[in-house]
Length: 150
Image (tube, rainbow, N blue to C red; front, side, top):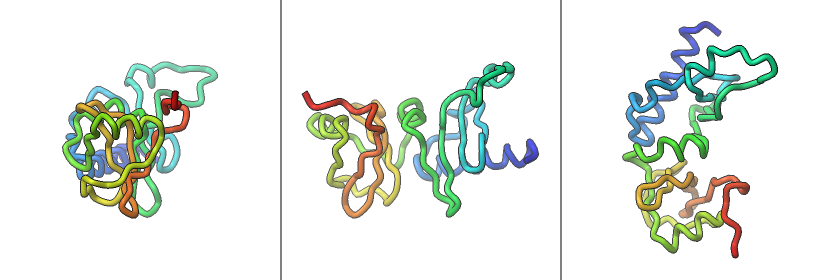
């Protein structure tokens, strides 16, 4: 794939992020976003991509995944780093909801958000994401990042 085509794919992803979450694409200036393989976008510092790591298969972290039907999903890392800039499809939790969410539990949808991925925050701090489906917010925080019940 040519550099122009790769750049076009990144620009389209940033357009989708702005449309869904209201995050201005300028927030991502200074970072290198690249398509590692079809539909899988990663983020790193530009300097990282300039280094020739002899045994590394990838640089940075998974930023987003784009699906063949046109949808996409931001990674938990991306949401925790950039979710504070979101102005749309964001849910702010109460303290008791936060406790449920960080333990991996789903929440009922009292926010009336659009169907699909939403950014979940507590006191404006991004915790992760959930998918709104069938009247519920289905927790998408990876099991390894959840707090175990004490």
